[in-house]
Amino acid sequence: MKKLLSVLLPVSMIITLITGCGGQASVTEQEAPRTGEVLTVFNYSEYMDPDMIEQFTAETGIEVKYEEATTAEELYTKYKSGGISYDLICTSDYMCKRLIDEGEAQPVDFGSMKNSANINQKFWDFNKAIDPSGTYALPYFWGTIGILYDTTKVSGEIDSWDVLFNGDYSGEIIMQDSMRDTFMITLKYLGYSLNTTDEAQIREAADLLKQQKPDVEAYLVDEARDEVVAGNATMAVVYSGEAFLGHLYNPDLKYVVPKEGSNVWIDSWLMTKNCTNTDAAQQFLDYLCRPDVATANFEFIYYSTPNDAVIKNMDDELKNDPAIIPSDESVAGCEVCTQVDTATTELYNELWKELKAQ
View (tube, rainbow, N blue to C red):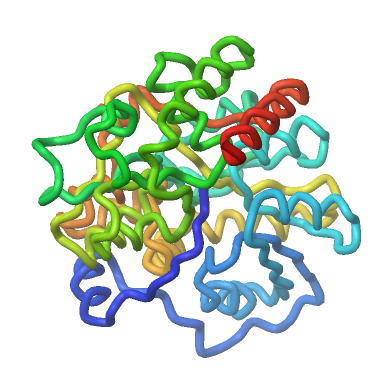
C-alpha cells in the first residue's frame, strides 16, 4: 500500500531513470472554460502529480477539490464522518472491500472509458478479491512486500522468509511495525493464507513471532529501508516501492519476494455512493488511465503501475527491476489482503499487543 517517501531522488537519478519513459505532461496553455462542475477527490498523501489535477481542470473545465490522508484508516474515518461529501476515493485493497461491503461505492461503467483498456487484465483479476463483480474498483498503483537485504552481509542469495526466523541474523533484522503485514509474513512462511480466520493458525503465527522477537532489531515502517541503506541493519521487510529507492542509494541492496509467497497490494479508485455527477467522475478516472497522465503519476511516485501503456515506454533498467515490475513467478504465490471478520480482527489486536509488550 501507499507509503510516504522520506527522501527525494537527486535530479541526476531522475533524469537517468525516466529516459525512454515519456516526458511528464504539461498543463495546457489554453484552459477550458469552467463548467461549474466540481469533483471532490480523496487520495493518499503525495500519491498524484499535482500538475495532473490542474491539467484535468484546464482540459475539461471541471474543478477538482483535492483532499489527502496518510493512512487507509484515517481516510475511512474522515469519509464516514460525513463532514465532506467525496465523489472519488483512492484507498487500499482491504479498505476498498470494506467500503464496497458497506454499500459506500457505486458501480463504474468501465466499458465506456476508452483508456481503462490500458490496465492489464491481471490487475482486474487481482481486484476480484475485493470486488468480485469487477464493477467498483479501478486499479491505480500496486506492489509487493518482501525482504530488502545487503548482499555484502549475507551468505548467498535469500529466497525464503526462513532467514527472518532461523536465528542466523539475530539483531540484524527489521520487521514491519504493522500488525497485518507482520502476521502475513509469518502465516505465509507457515504455509497458511494471509487471510485465514483459523484461530489455531493465527495463534501458531503469534507464537513464532514471540520466539523471533529477541532476534529483531526493531519494528519500523518507512525507516526500515533507511536502516538498511545506512548499514545499521542487514535486512528489512519493506514495500517494493521502498526497496526501489533503497537500491538507488545503495547498489549492494537487493529485493526479493520469498518463495513461500507474500502480499500483493493494490490501491484502487472507488466512486462513492454520494457522487451525483457520475459522468465527471468517470471522466476523471478515464483521464488517470491515459498514457501521458499515468506516466506523469508513475514518475511522481515510482510505485508499480498496472498501466501497460506506461510500462511499454519504460527503459529496460526499470522494466527489469523486481521492485518496479515483479515477475509473474514471484507474484504467483501472493495474495491480496482482504478485510477479515470482527472476531479475527480482535484476535489479531490481542496477539499484537502481547507481542509488542513482550
